[in-house]
Amino acid sequence: MTRDAPANTHGGTRRSMAGQSISERALQACADRLFVARREKKPVPPLSAEFGLGDPEQAYAVQDRNTRRWLQEGRRLVGRKIGLTSRAVQQQLGVNEPDYGMLWGDMTFSEADEIAAARFMQPRVEVEIAFVMEREVTATDTSLAELIGAIAYALPAVEIVDSAIADWKITLADTIADNASGGGNLLGIHPRAVKESDLRLCGMLLTQNGRTAATGLGAACLGHPLNAVLWLARKMAEVGRPLQAGDLVLSGALGPMIAAGAGDCFTVEIQGFAPFTWRLG
Image (cartoon, rainbow, N blue to C red; front, side, top):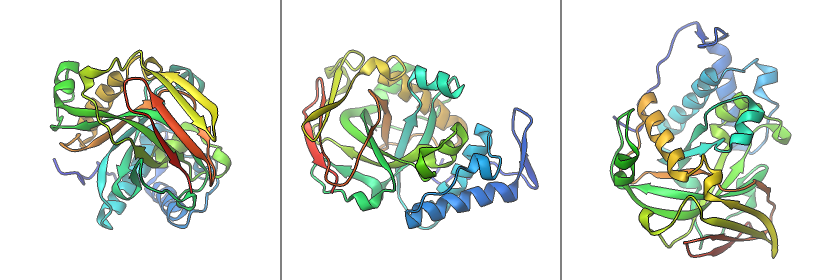
């Protein structure tokens, strides 16, 4: 399966599993609105209010339109990200599973890179554990043991979350359509084998300009970060974009999301990994 495998499309209208329908023209208008917002760095009003986008299946159809458009324009797909891994947030939004988005090469950085705040519209940051795949995962019933065997190593990471929806006034459908509010990501440069760290009980500390900004625990991510990656691997196989060798996976937040601005300096510490410091310029 290639990385740019097309999603299923239907003419006229798209009917969700919940029985709601929205025209293909409206779905394309949503995708166009987000595409331009991302390119021009200008947030737009909620699609849920303007176009009636409300169903996750339809929102993923919008996301996939822009994924295919970016691929056609030569953008490089380097992995996937998982969102909504907190049970409390899922309950708040009335869902019972995470969501997903794409990771792009031009928005993936290392701890040594200078990152300009101007790349983003309204950035926030959250600390995660990233995984790099050694082998592809193509089965929708992949076991946890098979998944672990397919992972090359883990890294400490920061997701730079960034919404194209003005003032972060998002619904579930808004964030899914907007590539799960994916902005960019920053990776530590000292990998660890999965078996070398207790990823469930590892503590996390994020400092911002010398002050504690967030704390967390591996168990905050669906009980264990590998639970989140297993969900993603099965879901990606199901939708026709399976994880490939070399793919990067952001497994979900270990703690709360923090607003960020130009000049902010962050230090990331995850138990079992080397700490690192970075600045949003």
